[in-house]
Amino acid sequence: MKAQSQTSDVVATISRSKASAKSALRAWLRLWACVGSVERVVRTRLYSDHGMTLPRFDYLSQLYREPDRRMNMTELSRRLMVSGGNVTGLTDRLVADGLVKREQDPSDRRVQIIALSDYGYERFIQVAREHEKWIGELFEDLGPDQMGVLNQTLGQLKQSLERKLNEQQEE
Amino acid sequence: MKAQSQTSDVVATISRSKASAKSALRAWLRLWACVGSVERVVRTRLYSDHGMTLPRFDYLSQLYREPDRRMNMTELSRRLMVSGGNVTGLTDRLVADGLVKREQDPSDRRVQIIALSDYGYERFIQVAREHEKWIGELFEDLGPDQMGVLNQTLGQLKQSLERKLNEQQEE
Image 1 (tube, chains in turn yellow, red):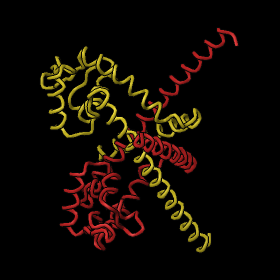
Image 2: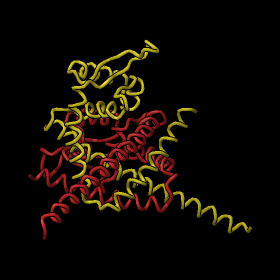
Image 3: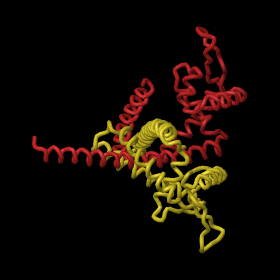
């Protein structure tokens, strides 16, 4: 291989990688803008229509998605991506309002479990039904094919990001 | 048209709209998860590698993207999607660190303009180059075709959301 063609290969690789970084940056800015817009609508409507804050809704939805509607505090904090102090304060208020209960793990008393109460479950279901309707309306301009492609690509991106984050934590 | 076929049309419409709401909800949860993961990495690296917080980076990037690197305070607050009080406090700290300057609009002295300083510009460019690299690495598992489709779909979603939000504000 001649020196010149080697150089042009390197140049091609660099410009390809620059182009893909630009394309990734564009995707990231669009992702961020879309999430910002949807979050703004959801936050406003949750509060005005149901007197519920977004962190509360997010908290309850994490428990709701578990088969036995309970989760240990460490995992819950991790999924909510907020600091431990904030989760403790939020938990106190949700317990006071009867939406969740604190339990002890029978196999390890040091582990704190948070469980969705029956009242919390009923309340969540009610709000989640509305939430699903709002999201449907916000995304309605995308046709079924586009929605399919979007879901497929985001599913792959989500998995890839989770793998990368786990690798970083293990380092 | 017979009553029965009318009914089955209605049923078909309802189940189509339910299916699309489910599909939209799935897309939303994936969008949110992806943004959460990327944001976590960006927030951590901005702070550990450059001693910069994400709200600061976001603030500077809004000014950087303007042709004359300045924006009025009202528009800046709107774009940063945080409350006015927070933007004022953040502005105070950025002014104290010499990254931005407060100016008065010559045509209307009541309007406050925020301008990126030369130092702020240099500092932003430095960090933004790294930021682009991180994003490129985080998205690298998506091929060019997938990235193209993702960008196209998100571009359309972004426009549709902006239109919906503007309509709501006008109501």
